[in-house]
Structures are given as structure tokens and as C-alpha cells.
Amino acid sequence: MKEIIKVVIADDQQLMREGLKTILELEKDIIVQGTAANGKEALDLCRSLKPDIALMDIRMPEMDGVEATRQISAAGLKTKVIVVTTFDDDELIVKALKAGAKTYLLKDLPSEKLLAVIRATYRGDIVMQPEIAAKLVERASGELVSAEVLPSGRSLVTLTSREKEILSLMAEGLNNGDIASTLFLSEGTVKNQVSIIYSKLGTNDRTQAVLLALKNNLI
Image 1 (spheres, rainbow, N blue to C red):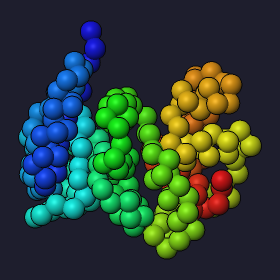
Image 2: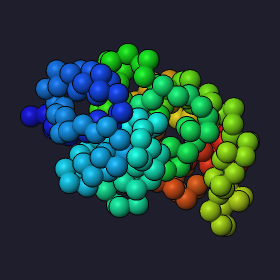
Image 3: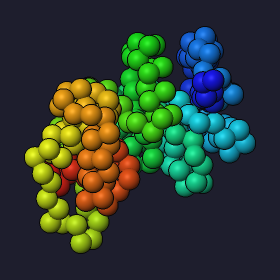
């Protein structure tokens, strides 16, 4: 029996909330627990319902999506935030990821891709749209990610050529299965390599690993 993925939707546009809700409720393995018109309502829903996934808009009244995401993370909630917005501003992208969002999607994404990202995020994978990954790469040496430095004592991290290949593909938004297919490796081998990369970088978060690698010119 498939596990049921519990989702809340936060967007200040009623039409968008209802549209996303309709799309998700057609899926047998997804239920929408509730919808919110602003970040404060979204935070309250996450605290009370403890959903698996929160689809979070950025620009909302009372509390924006970045602050709601930050407070969800600070509260220690297990809800994984997926930002879904029309804004592809690189400053907002970095702020949202640093606040704890697992990925950042644009609203023109096809519905089947959104569903795939929700399921991948629920499993613990991080899937980044190529457009968003490209923006992160472009700003890797910029001031927006200046806080993303390697932990103390890890400034001399060296990566093997294979680890660099895998990290580069992670930066392009590929999940472990896609990386395995691209490099003609088993998915188990890729998972092991990713674990080693996490250990070297001092993180266990896929997005943070990519940001650290880009900022520190490791890839």
C-alpha cells in the first residue's frame, strides 16, 4: 500500500490555491490537509497538522513565504517546504533555500513535474529546476551566498573527480537515480558517494552541499 503524502498549500491567490488543491487531490497518494492565504496561516497549519510537504508562495501578506519557511525550520517541524512562485529573482531563491526550503519551483512548471518533485522531496531527494540551478551557479561567487562557507576546519576539502561529477549533476537538479543513469553507476553507489560528499562538506542537506561546493569553488 502506498504511503499517503500530506500537503498544505500556501498562496495569497485563491485561484492558485484551489487549482493546486484540485491537481493534488486527483492523486491517490496525496491528500491536501489545508490551504493558507499567507505565511502566518501556513505556519499555524504546519504546527497543528504536521504535514509532510508545504507548497509555499513567496510574496504573501502578514508573513511572507521566506519567513514562514524559516519559522517552520526553527520550530523543528519535519514539514519539507517547496517554494512555488512566479518570482525567479536570485536573491529570493538563495534566501528561501537558506531559510530551509528544500527546493524552489516556478509556477509555470507542468503539473506532472510538480507531482514528481513533491514525491521526490517526500522521499528525501532534492530536485532543482534547471533554470533555478543555473541561477545558483551564476551567483555562486556573489555576495548573496557569502554566508555559505565551509565549517571550521574544512577549508582544505578535496573532492575526487567522481565526487565533483556527482556534485555538478546535483547542482543541475538531478536526483540519485538520474545521476546513476548519467554516469552508468548503480544508485547504491551514487548514494554512498553522496554520503561521502556530505561528510567532507560537514552537512547532510543536499541543497546546502551544492551551495557550499559552488561558493567554495569545489565544482
